[in-house]
Figure 1 (cartoon, one colour):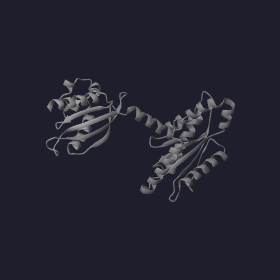
Figure 2: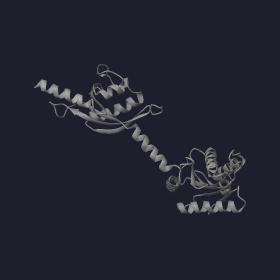
Figure 3: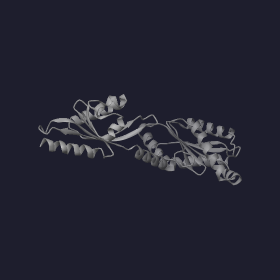
Figure 4: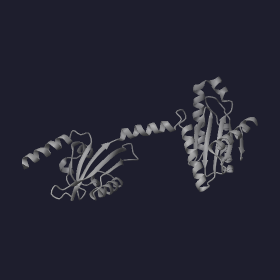
Length: 295
């Protein structure tokens, strides 16, 4: 009977070596007592080297602490699922989906004697998901937030205003006579100019601000915790920097900007419409200028 049992285990271990996941068993001391061949390759060690080793031999301290916290849960009777990031700040960053479950004694059904873990490398999958998410939120040409993402962030900041009464301002900007740029220099050079404009607006703005492409040659800057005077100052800095900048492809470009601030009772549409009206005044009053409306 023991021989038959040993043969079954041998067959099981051989099968697990063909599973393209990392399968391992730990005892109650958090020591490895088994790992399939893929785990051994990951750890770059032999089965003998692995035996009775702990996570500290293979992972940095922050990951060890994270794994230990999960293992403690499992030894208390909980099955777990979590994502673990290893080498998160380096080019060797990997993401693993870990499933762990308690192992119970054959002779004492309520006694937990170890941990069974199965880890799957989902780095490529997560990278594809992150790329798809970025594309959904980002303007392809400029890399700025797109209209959909701007709407989402505007709604979020409006809710923050309603809760905390933080000031909230927006700047709507439009390049002056940009159709002439496209007509005279072509859309390819016009696009290069838009990218440079995007970089300038980003450089002028704070980390907490969101710069986005509203559409065509229009841009929107979302300025949380910023009153009207602060937003006007930012808009003027953007205007001046662009007016003084030399663009190799098209030489000089100017921009008009409309500024407004959120007023209690505003909707998103009311806020944007007021910024648009301010921008219209900047255009009709000579362009290359900043105008503001408060209500």
